[in-house]
Length: 239
Image (tube, rainbow, N blue to C red; front, side, top):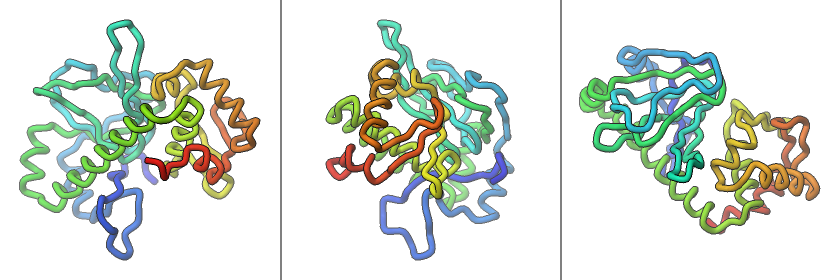
């Protein structure tokens, strides 16, 4: 997949039409061309590049086409809370009263399409089919946010870690489904800041999961998974 290929990652809230497949919404050739026409492709080559900061004027909406980024804010006590990881096909630029509510930085080399929010608003009004796809994406992200709240509130540290690994395995660019190999683009510190624990707890949790036989660490960021067994630990049916 070319790094600047426009895809929107979302699972529709209703029964898919026959022939439709996730995890990306169906966009026609013309719709992709229209989005490329009004967007600007930009690339960041290094890890830790800041895309925008909390409190800045929200002039742009971003569509990530390649790489992984993270959104976070710093708590009053100085601790960092990661609120989202963004994968290819994700839209980012959450704003309130015209300013960004989180800081977003790259976790790897990334490519984005950047859209002026004012121009995108006008464009969507005149292109209802594409507006519909952005609506489906917003619903998808809302479901994910609700799921994250439940996970943080109901699951213990080990199950939160297992749930995070299961979620990462849903991204085809980073999970080799044939060999069940997951390549994590984030560090254990990033994972800890996301699931609300410490890096030491993440390290111990990975050790426990390996001792249970549900993962095998090929390297610090490369894991061989037994996905069915991981899901059983999380018991996703509970939420």
